[in-house]
Image 1 (cartoon, helix red, strand yellow):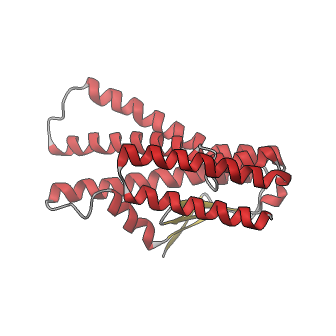
Image 2 (cartoon, rainbow, N blue to C red):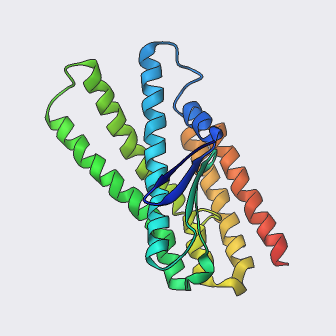
Length: 217
């Protein structure tokens, strides 16, 4: 497991994070050096995107007074940890939304770069082609994953905001809304992507929500 400190925040990265990033980047189909260049750039884009997203959560939590922050990057994404009992409901909602907010800002920054690259004309060399590829991936990841993450599905950020908004006394209602939305989201993703990985993620989200629903009884 790789560990380092960023802005005095401990960050740990599980090997499954790199493995699944490579898988999503097309490592199983890569044959040429050019293919592997794109796989590596995709992995870097995933790393930067998720790290910035989790930094958004963590820095907002620190701003509101949460202690013992840390960030973990794992096979299914990332996780910002700290003591949330020190935050009130409004602060927890804002802290949750800070992650998608950071992703949107990152997407906007790379969208501006993409416009500048488009206006400069077609790439004149292979390195420029790779730069264009990286910029496109950064925009796509941070737009697509932010939209998915804001659906009211537990334990995604949208689901966390829903749970905080409805309150602890309405956990069962939160779970029901989460499951109904998850079924819709899974159907849309399957029609658009036909991705087995996406369905595995949907199954994980459904399992989390069903366990929470059982506990609420």
